[in-house]
Image 1 (tube, rainbow, N blue to C red):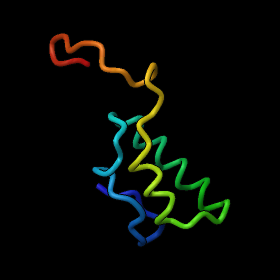
Image 2 (cartoon, one colour; image 1 turned 90 degrees about the vertical axis):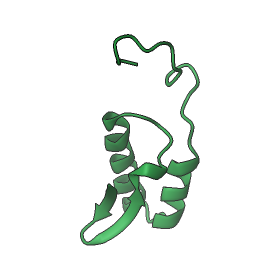
Image 3 (spheres, rainbow, N blue to C red; image 1 turned 135 degrees about the vertical axis):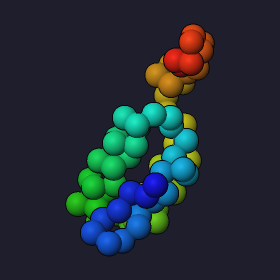
Length: 68
């Protein structure tokens, strides 16, 4: 799956380290805002692919019945 702008593929969602559909939505918003701020698309995608998030916010705790 890709984050797109019009017909342009901006960033492959598989390259985003953060897990979850909501994180992909957050990435889409960050791409849109970076576009408004005239940030190069490749740089914005690179940042998303390198961003690990905040340790206390995205820390794996447990898997209970397939829910993490």
